[in-house]
Length: 116
Image (cartoon, rainbow, N blue to C red; front, side):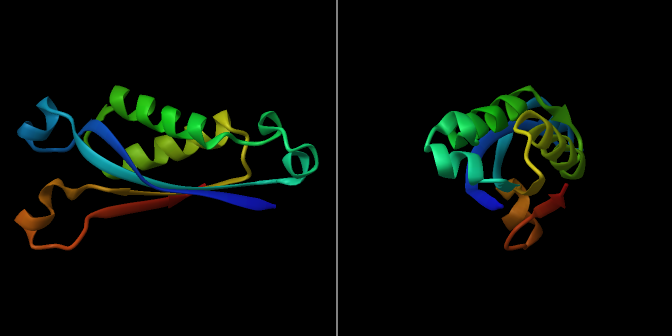
């Protein structure tokens, strides 16, 4: 078993409860960890036997561009489920940072984490 970690994938998504958030996409940062059996790719050295992280990054960006919702929790749950299914991994750990309102709320970060 091995893990791929991708930290801080920059995406744009239409997400939030406030009216201003519902009309304009905003920056999010997605970090994820995908766990799966590395033995096939370890033996063959062929990317087709593993998970190509470029495909994962493209998928996360496409999902985010198409997303239209109100909560980070739902976004994270849906994205984690889609990643697990599409890339046939045994486990997905995902966090989403929403930097837009950090200073306004007097916070260092706003983050949601899920694991599937």
